[in-house]
Every structure is written in C-alpha cells, then in structure tokens.
Length: 182
Image (cartoon, rainbow, N blue to C red):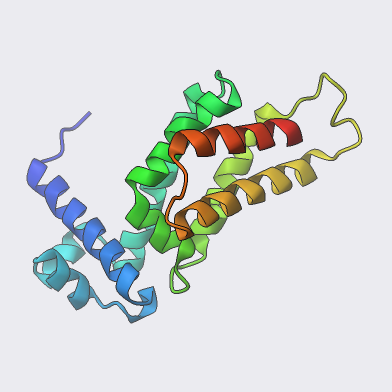
C-alpha cells in the first residue's frame, strides 16, 4: 500500500473542512471554487490537483463518511442493539458540523440522505428476526424501508434539536425501537 504524503492529506482535509463550513453558511449551489480556496487558504489550482470540481469534492466527503459507517457495521452486528449504536451516535456527535449541514440544512444536496438511508438499510438486512415469527406477515423491503427511514429521521431530529440526549441515551432508545421493529 502506497503511503500518501502528509501535505496532501493536510490539503485535502482543509478542503473538506472548508466546503462543510461554507455549506453551513450558504447553499452548496452558491459556493464557488474560489470560495472554497479562500476559506481553506489555498490557491484555486490546488483544488483541481485533488478534485475535478466542487461536486467531486462533496462526493468524496460523502463517500468517506459512508465508508466509515459501513466499517462500523462489520463489528456492530455482533453486539446487541443498544451497545452497537453507541459508536454510531458518538460518530454523529463527533462529526456534528457535517451531519447538521448534510442532513438538517435545506441547501445541502439530498443525495447524502439517500445514500445514508441505503447504507443503513443494507446494514439492517441481516438483523431482521426471522426465527421468532414476529415478522412473518411482513415483507422484508417494507421492514427495511421503515427501519432505515426511522433511523435517519431520528438522527436528523437529534442533530436539528442540538443533540438533547447523550449518544448513550440515544443508542439505548433507538436500539430498543429497532429491536422491536426488526
């Protein structure tokens, strides 16, 4: 595996941070490459060394976070719901600016919410209780849509309302609800 130069990583992080902070201030469509460059204290040309355009930059930000959440799925499915969800809510809390901008902002592209929903629905696929019979009358696609939409909605609510409960409380509450429905 090739080691990436720390200067490149630092530049890319500055650009990611700049675009998220700018999105907290104005609609993504109104943000220019020059705005991003100025906010990151970089030259416009530097952005084009790393990304095709602002859409490519935003897409890579979204993909990186979805990938991190999927990585958590690999070990979280071995735990009970309440314990498994704590790291997720801690991740949302740690990345509050991103999630508040991408989920709660009216000017953010809706594709992030859709990608997040799809990712959660994929993660829930293996969690449906098929042995007890409680879901015998329910279609899997309906259950996944219901649980995924509820989960994304509660994350939006939690972030929009200033995270009124700790990640641990949210994990316990949401874990209980998901366990009941899946």
